[in-house]
Length: 111
Image (tube, rainbow, N blue to C red; front, side, top):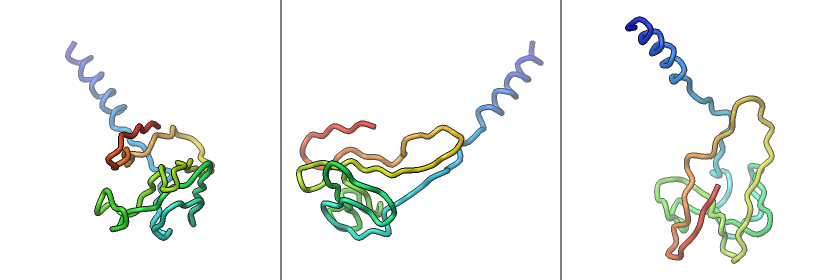
């Protein structure tokens, strides 16, 4: 019985030690801070509205976190941010650094 538990534990630990590889990472540091963006230098596109590129002291709701995109924009018409990618293999996961709106108004975020 003990021998079976040791073998099972060894097999299970091997399965659990697998780690995901990062196959795509991006940031918005190449773009200038601004309001009502419709496209970005690094290939991201905005459709159906506008977004704001904020941070680094400019409408900086999360200080010391670099530049980030406010999908609600300032035009009153929230934008859709997208980028076409060709990835092979693996299983995509959602970003780990997402945040809901940091404004006083109530907001709903979903992914």
